[in-house]
Image (cartoon, rainbow, N blue to C red):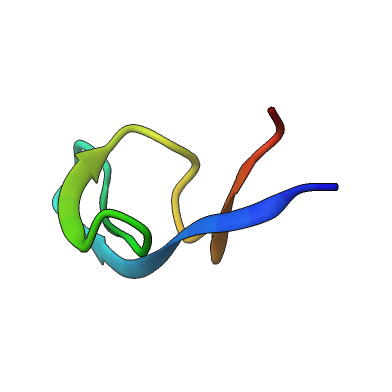
Length: 43
């Protein structure tokens, strides 16, 4: 079962969006799909 590991803020600077990784309490710039609401860890 997948778990949510991050939620996109929806901020796009043209290179990606900012994503807050909930478990680690950090923010990082991602290159994942624009405007995607949730990030799943499939492992």
